[in-house]
Length: 452
Ligand SMILES: Cc1cc2nc3c(=O)[nH]c(=O)nc-3n(C[C@H](O)[C@H](O)[C@H](O)COP(=O)(O)OP(=O)(O)OC[C@H]3O[C@@H](n4cnc5c(N)ncnc54)[C@H](O)[C@@H]3O)c2cc1C
Image (cartoon, rainbow, N blue to C red; front, side, top):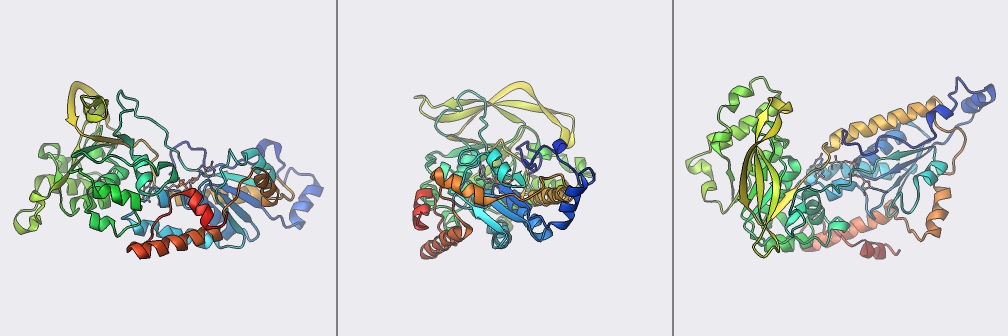
């Protein structure tokens, strides 16, 4: 997740200008560097893909380096556990690689420790040769329009956290007692949310979605999901795999306005291949839907999803008693410019769309693969700085100086072995329920299970 200004891919070692490089160091220092094998103690904050891939690189390319991964949650893996959709188990296979890293005798997972609260960055800097801040992107941004405080308006991130068992979203319990939901944003997360809302429950039952989410989704009245974007079909941010899943979703049909797609094929002749294929699939679905037997009963499907383009939220409309969402007012936009850089500007027209739920997704972009590249690069640059003497010279205590601090503050860190006990418990509970795992969502219960 590169372009998001989240303070990652930096390490908080001593300011570079004040450190001696080997070339600039007095002879005694240089001899020290060349004769003494320094054991670098590196601290990584955050156990998502960024943290684990950085740790992996450091351990692989430095024979002595020791890496401690601090994590505020009781359990590891960040958004791989709490973001990736439950019906995408193949994406979660990266956990196997992270587990191998965590099993290294030179790596330690320190879960249940919030950096900035339980231990400060400056304490970590004193204890380690380098501190890598890879704590992800917390999503506290709001929509910024009137009515967004109404019950029924949710951030997609919170909704995703809820169905994936993120402790802070555990109690969200959205009211799905309405026939139409509207999602603001046309990226993969929007399609994840739409898919989870529309997927037949017997398919969701086979995933690691939480028991609470299943219970609520079983009662869901949602039959139609609009996925709304500020720009046009040539600017959607979702990818073809996720679109295909929507098109083939059992018992759901696509609601696409043919007028939105006419003439697009001519415009994408020179477009990059992924955009071209994605647009071709959209055009085919909108303009050439299968007929007869091939239609697979789609026209009679009880549920539907649709894309609405060139619409920007202006106001969430309340129900007559003001108690919840009844709709949303959208500004009708037009495009200035073309292709990926086209800008949406208001036309002055507005449109009201009735709906009982609104989600928005305003969050970082990027996928696990881009995070992997960034993590490896971070590890590489850090090792280079180590070699060039940019990082502090001389031994550092590492975790042995942090452990007493945490103890004094009543913090009980969770080890990777502890996590493996919880993992085994989740798998066992899942087997009993006929699912791959039954996610534990209550941190207190988890701590009790591992005897804390
Ligand atoms: C809803 C959603 C679905 C996604 N689905 C996919 C997908 O299907 N495929 C794909 O490739 N990518 C997907 N992504 C993107 C992918 O999850 C991210 O690119 C990736 O997780 C980013 O890794 P990260 O380590 O930077 O951040 P995160 O995964 O967010 O990890 C950061 C970690 O830091 C921890 N942390 C935060 N603050 C502190 C603190 N103060 N002290 C200690 N620890 C802290 C957090 O608890 C977390 O564990 C999805 C993203 C979202 C939001």
